[in-house]
Image 1 (tube, one colour):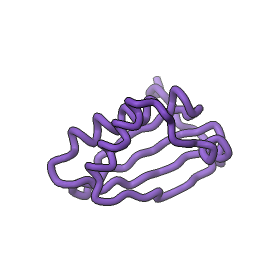
Image 2 (cartoon, one colour; image 1 turned 30 degrees about the vertical axis):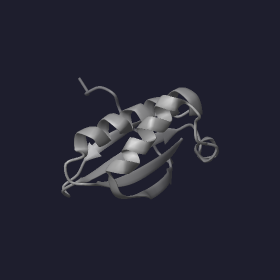
Image 3 (cartoon, helix red, strand yellow; image 1 turned 60 degrees about the vertical axis):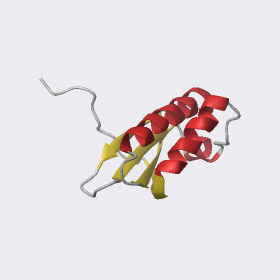
Image 4 (cartoon, helix red, strand yellow; image 1 turned 135 degrees about the vertical axis):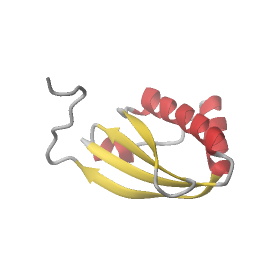
Length: 105
């Protein structure tokens, strides 16, 4: 499994718009590009959000290309309009995994 971690510094007052656009972009990538989806997190830094995307492999992630879907393109443009800057912080290959989806009983 492969993980990409992104840092998004958004412009003041754009969090609601960014998050809505991020969700549409993420749904399209999940549906059309073979990802396992993504999570978006707030951080301890003002106007900085962190995204975590999971893929079956690095090779699958590297194959991502721009979709020609109109709603995806519109959401991607809105996301970019909200950004002051963004970067891929980490490209990670999972070596050990004990992440659970429920609490121990």
